[in-house]
Length: 274
Image (cartoon, rainbow, N blue to C red; front, side):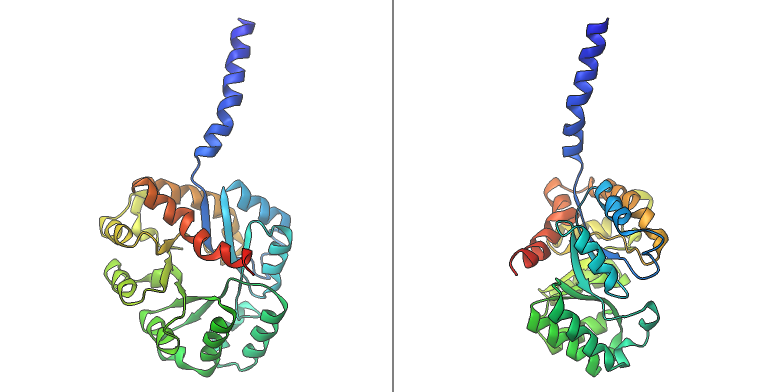
């Protein structure tokens, strides 16, 4: 009997790494670590949350940018910094009309490394305002993505300003599958994150209309949690598991692309190559 127990214990120990290796990695393309999160979720705790969730990479922006820099300094192998133009959460609705934002963004770009500018909120004709136009120019100058929380109209306007721009459409614009697929056909340099888009998987089951879009554009989507409040940090792990559940209904290769390969291909190499 003791020998049998030892054999069972050994088998369990051997199986643990195998099970861990089978867990689908996640590239989370939409995380924030803003000023109201630092005290609630200290930096090392936040990094531990990301690692426990099985994240391969985490694309992080914050208001102010100091939060992003805290996480990146603690885990440069995990965190990919994105520069949000807001210095505080209260600037979400005013930043595009505040000329001082340009100087702030220019200074941070000179001091730190990033893969994107954003996530920023911009809608309709506001995308043609001078501050937004300058951010498009800076993204081009530094070879960065634009992470836009926008309607389709604003996204179109960004591409008019720079037809070669690379845009990550936050929340897939909260648009219908038909609109999203139409935008992806129109703009070859448009990708979309699925943060807060649980409507594509009601009850954890993938909606058929979304399935068609994912099958048509397997290289253009990424998952995201959107930790827009400190409390959302405790949802990173459950959200990663939720994503794995609905991705499991897709062909394995496509599931892997959306889960992590697309983000890794697009963003991780940007940091490695600079």
